[in-house]
Amino acid sequence: MTFEAGVSCALLERRTERSSLTRAFTVHARTLEQLDTRGMADELVASGTPVAELRLFACAALDLSRLPSRFPYVLVTPQYETERVLEERARRVGADIRYGSVVTGFTQHPDAVEVNVRQDGHPDRVLRAGWVVGADGIHSMVRQALGMPFPGKAVVRSVMLAEVRLTQPPPDALTLNSTGDTFAIIAPFGDGFYRVIAWHRHNQPPDDAPLSLDEVGEVSRQALGTDYGMHDPRWMSRFHSEERQVPRYRDGRVLLVGDAAHVHSPAGGQGMNTGIQDAANLAWKLAATVQGWAPPGLLDTYQAERHPVGRQVLRTSDALLRMLTAPPPLVAARNVLALAATRIPFLASRMAAAISEVGICYPAPHGAHPLVGKRVADLPVAGGRRLYQTLRGGRFLLAASPGVLQADAASGYGDRVEVASVARASGTVALIRPDAYIAWAASGDTATAPQIRGTLAHWCGSPAHPAAQTADS
Ligand SMILES: Cc1cc2nc3c(=O)[nH]c(=O)nc-3n(C[C@H](O)[C@H](O)[C@H](O)COP(=O)(O)OP(=O)(O)OC[C@H]3O[C@@H](n4cnc5c(N)ncnc54)[C@H](O)[C@@H]3O)c2cc1C
Image 1 (cartoon, rainbow, N blue to C red):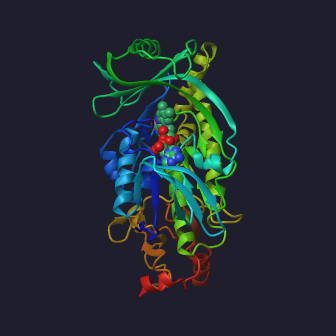
Image 2: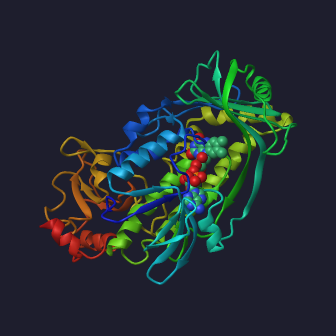
Image 3: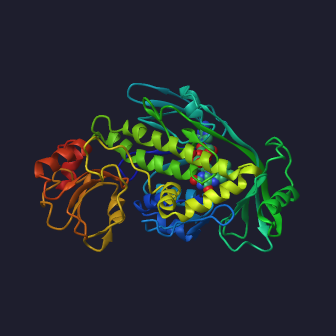
């Protein structure tokens, strides 16, 4: 069983089949870009509704249509569609997906991890793996087995969730308002049902208290002025949200991604997006480590790069939640602030970059070229392709304007590095990582062949790696 990078990979899932429930319903531009670099974005976009203007409070609306992205919008689509697209691709490239497999514990050894797996109530079996990635959600048993603290606090209680039909659906794909004592959000699933999220400051029973459609409808009417004719609920529940983050994303041969590593309220719709981007950051580094060419310290850049992003996402979602639940005396001031922030171009573009996550960048070494650590744009490359299409093989890209790079610039690295000519004359040579961030850049006038070879050795290991010779020949 081999994954695309040539790495054997098993996914253990305690559910017996793919979930048909949905929590997340927004997929942001940067997540779509990262899915595009593996050829999954167009299929996912076809499953949902692009929303280019995010309505916030009162008349404030955030314009996403100017995002510098092929996806200048937020895609509204149920989480099970995102999971379907990811699962189908994982299967295509050879991942071994085992439903009905409950991880009950593991033991770390210097060269491997032994994972205890229970299937169909049979006694535990032991699976031996080089590495374990805990992607097992907020109650992560992997995190608990590591004894990793998960500090934080509950931030909002008794939020109502319902999946309903509507007699008079709202005109916008994403409908949101808050009044000080209430908020409500409505989004379509695309199958005739709508997700309703509603909250009332003065009605906060515990999560397991019964929930009626009348209650959801009443709070929606208070927040939105109408309940759009809610009827036929297929599922209803209450939940509370917490804000927590582990101090370390790695312990020996075990790594944490997604909700296992960080959780926050759904305000801003960032949780699943951040988890997918954690995985995009980690996957190629782990593959490089397993394949044996990872330079020293590469795997630890996962913590250095993604932990600060997780911390920032907690702050952003906290700020959005505070705005959403601002008490009545602050509502007028909040509405004015939101209106100003969405109308002042500089602030509006910063907000759009934060929410869409296209603004994420990673730390660069002192004195590095200003592009280092930044997201690379989806530029046209020679041969009529886009840069993100060129990344679909999961390799680095050494890119420059036509004629700048020597034909043998990346010789010996054929398995890890593709050389491409960017169709636009930018005068810059750049090494682009498999996750579409810029590892290194220099002006084409000053970049020397030894400098490029040194950069390749720093990021991509030794050219003498056996797989490279096969791929080059
Ligand atoms: C109401 C609501 C709305 C939200 N809306 C958005 C949104 O619009 N956009 C967004 O980005 N995020 C949103 N989120 C957050 C998002 O749903 C989560 O961040 C996301 O699901 C986390 O994905 P994950 O894979 O890390 O964890 P999960 O989705 O929780 O998946 C973990 C998986 O691990 C399995 N598992 C657990 N323990 C074991 C075990 N011991 N052995 C084997 N398998 C195990 C579980 O069965 C599960 O399938 C929302 C959350 C809520 C509650």
